[in-house]
Image 1 (cartoon, rainbow, N blue to C red):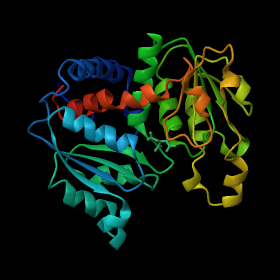
Image 2 (spheres, helix red, strand yellow):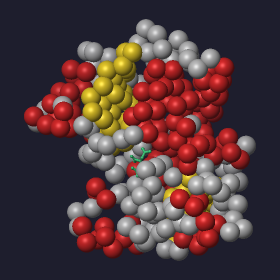
Image 3 (cartoon, rainbow, N blue to C red):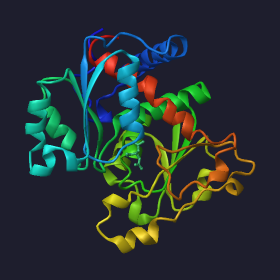
Image 4 (tube, rainbow, N blue to C red):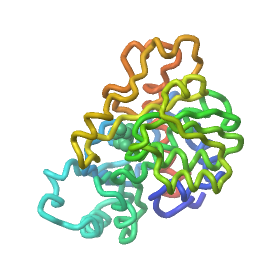
Amino acid sequence: MPPPFRHLISATQITKDILDRFFTVAEKMEKILVKKGRGTLLKDNVIATLFYEPSSRTMLSFEAAVQRLGGGMILAQGKENSSMKKGETIEDTIRMVMGYADLIVMRHPESGAAAKAASVSTVPFINAGDGGNEHPTQALLDLYTIRKEFGRLENLHIAMAGDLLYGRTVHSLSVLLGLLPKIRLTLIAPSELAMPKNVTAMLKEKGVEFKESENLADGIGADVLYMTRVQEERFKDRAQYERLKDKYILTAAHLKGSKAKVMHPLPRIHEITTDVDALPNALYFTQAKNGVPVRMALLAMMLGKA
Ligand code: NCD
């Protein structure tokens, strides 16, 4: 099949048709994982992963995905160890790496870095998080997880809580939720960390029912309670971070009688206590695991192999 898009920079590029095709491929990838552990779809490819900002799950699950499909890999990690430290531009880095690899995955601290990189790349490019802007592959794995858990992607009440301003995962997830029917959103954040206006404007335009709240209790009755970390690295004012960092702490006691599935892109810092981990509500480690088949599917599709 032809690739759904040349580069993946933003969740706004994903249509409902692409999403449906994507889920079918991701399910196939999961079968490869369960039955054989490894496939060969990428045996002729080399993938570059450039992570200029800390990452565990995204980086490792991309790398696991490449290996599970038999591909080769080249890696750059941390700005300290790369030419970024010497002042090389994003564009020049990409111009070089595209001579070494068939597809580039990049995480970068700057919002808009992914668009810059893709603008010069002659090989497919995937945004693995650009500053506080977007994280489209996380949104894909979040939806894949919800679909698997609930057996549907409609008629769901999703609450998102925490740092909705700087949290790039909730921006991309909101965009994808805007493609689905009968979704109700509750956006829970202190006013200083409320969802950016461009995202709420998009939700309005798409006719998604949403309400904004400052109270974590408003998320306990939802189908999904998506918690987020307060993004310490994005704050200009340290005192403001200190004041807001422990605003929402979800504990097992809050979830008494609640059927809400608790999701989190991870890492969690203070916002979910460990006594939640053993509850049937906890979905965050399963969510992280789903990163592998989801990223296998994306790589295979973007390289025209699925
Ligand atoms: C998130 C990120 O990097 O945006 N983590 C991830 O990719 N799973 C969330 C976060 O760092 O808080």
